[in-house]
Length: 400
Image (cartoon, rainbow, N blue to C red; front, side, top):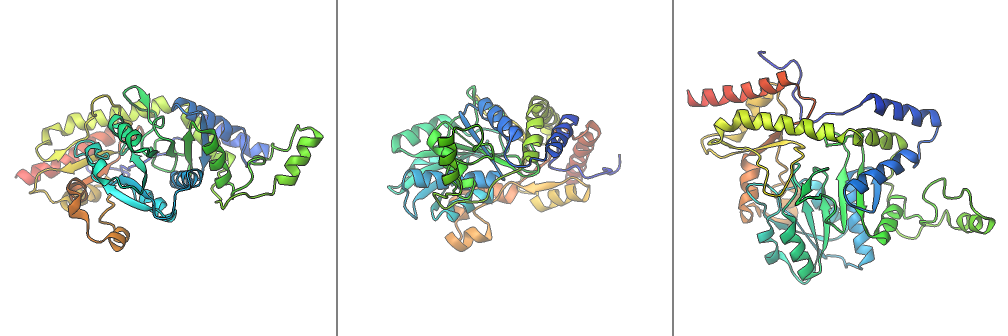
């Protein structure tokens, strides 16, 4: 196989026969607004991840944004309050904090897991710190025990950004079950893909009510679904009718349709197959690339953790290898790559905070040397072998 027939991409979509059946059922019903598929997906997904309430909306980013807005309202956070977040993560974490008039405070990450380094958190806490945003990057949970100890010590809220990590555990407890509010994404190239979509999970009933109101323009929670005015007594109906066009807080339009719910539910029902396929792909890559571990750092599962392998991160260790050279060699041979979520060197962050990258040496190392490739269940064995052959071609040329 001289060159991949098609691009070996970083993401895929699982559109099963069941997914088509569910979507067609939605279309046949004529109901696209919040209904049985969204409700069933919210229920099953939240239960699996150890939460009482699940709210599906249009993106993981809006799940994060509305989570911060919810906590800000519920706990009367003032403008400029601080939220701690990792110095390596996707830009949306930064954006949603700034969007809510709050201040992001960066903490460097661990060099082995790429998640926030608990040992670095405490020195960044001030009297104005209100929360820690814990991001489970690339499919592996962060080290939660010390983070929970810190949050309890300083009375800080925890927002879990679990957009890249579903279905896996830290010390036998599922991701999404640690935070005051936990956020997931079902956008393209994620572990479940409904086209657009995200979820916020919580065990706090007040938060769940606020979240659902926020995503519906700030609407009074008495009327969220078109079913909320059905089957009521005359007195109850009058109360709903008088309040169903009442808006009690500034809100957003962050809803999704039943079609996204149908796609997400069908994939949820096959999540074991999806996760097993990603694990199998990752283990093959690790076994085949281990001979080059003097040159590159491969993903490792940390103690007491599982890994969903949303992607396959690689960091160059040998200073003789230029990241651009390896990345371009892969791209020219039809293997798609992405940077490992650089944040503190982004133009928008530099504009707001200046040149701060040297203050975060591990994140700087990842920014300069890290990238990832796809690691999903639809990469065929032929494509996996082809990918490994291209890596071997690069390193053989390097040594020749």
